[in-house]
Amino acid sequence: MKALELRRRGFRDLIDLLLYATALTNGVLFLTRDAQLLRFLAEEGEDVCVVLLEEEFLERFGQR
Image (cartoon, rainbow, N blue to C red):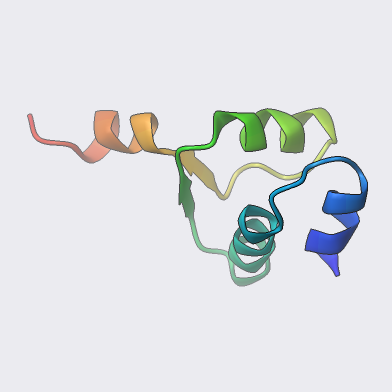
């Protein structure tokens, strides 16, 4: 239901929204390349603590 609500509010990629809602519900990280998704969620006041952009992941955990 959360994914459908967010889609109605303007983000078109339902798969990304389903993945986000699943991560949020289960308290796991959602790794994505989609910075536009992160911006949308933040602008809508959604909890973005479970979203990790690929570039951040590589900075934190990539080869050194």
